[in-house]
Image (cartoon, rainbow, N blue to C red):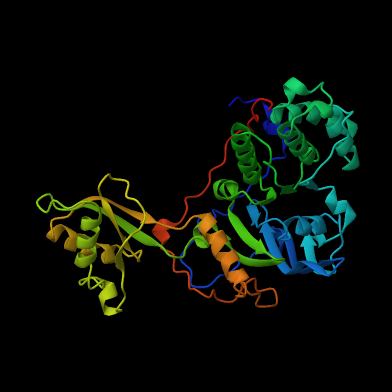
Length: 415
């Protein structure tokens, strides 16, 4: 990835970002921020469309400067509606809060916000340069600044080779790149991106993620709407799962996936026994009975922690044992029992659910009529009520912090 000398595109700022690594917690709590640190702070957002379609039902959202926040949800969950309320594209039935220290709906504040709609359409008779100039003018960017920034942004998003083409000749991926460039023309303090990588090839997605990490390091607040779970896992500090107009869960990637944590132990049966396939599984089941393995802390809790896993082992011929615990002391007696019986340990590793697992868990709970896992406690405490399932995630399983890059990258060639 080449350095185009574009690092001066964005005003320098100082300050460390929140690391977003997650920590053990027994309640689902939103972080508490000083008002000056919050780029977005809205509460009790309601929106009902014609036909009594409730798009938003009391949504609360807090995003500090220097954070990438993801809104994850299925189509129709309310993600785009929430962003449109922030941009005053539509009016909420009821809402309170601020963006960049000013009430939601303050027009001068919107000049400090970059916005990429999901279904954007640019005049197809314009070139990329003309489109960015147009949006820069609407955002109040002066002509001298526009003349400097427009070519830099075109280079930055990888459209240099197509700068003279009309938009009508652009592919969907190229239009997304152009949309990102127009969202950055005013050097925004807040960036609202609705499905920013839709239609972009894998290389372009990677470069967009790298760019977003650099913007975060420069203390920009970034909100990403998407239903592509992998995008959120790779770039976001925190995320919220929205369904049917309500936020159902919120936290860092480690916190959102801190349920059903376990160790997986893979083992091959004893050579002398000549066991394989179903016979080995039957022997292992018998070995793990009673399932409360003696010698570990879970014995005193009467907890069944060891069982044969249904998933395929990574070692050919091996069988997996799932230990439903994140305490290393609980794994040792399981390993001891297997080794004593002649089983050969081939692998031991920690396993946590994926973001997809967390997402589907929320959807299944919601469809089953269960309330959101987060409930607003009221006031400005920023703390929500305990989760239905306490989340005592092991600190060793917390996600590592994202790192920024020193210079702004160029998003690779046109698609």
